Image 1 (cartoon, rainbow, N blue to C red):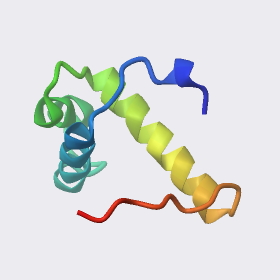
Image 2: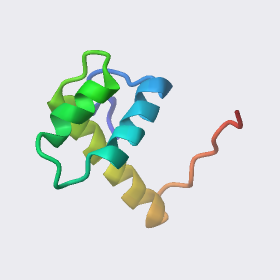
Image 3: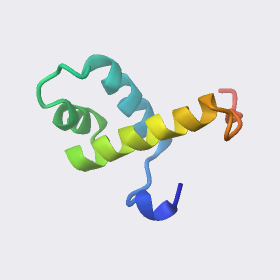
Length: 76
């Protein structure tokens, strides 16, 4: 994925808030991306949040298909 697709970096904390918000606001939620953007904070727009979601889905698709290895996460 080219870095030009990621206009603004996401912090680990923003990613965690993003994941939690995705669980709260499903595909049938009105104003889903706006509500997720508000939950994430940090000035993220609804468009940035939706783009981040599509990047995540593409990453998962590539991992599931074996194109890229599963990332090794640090233990906390």
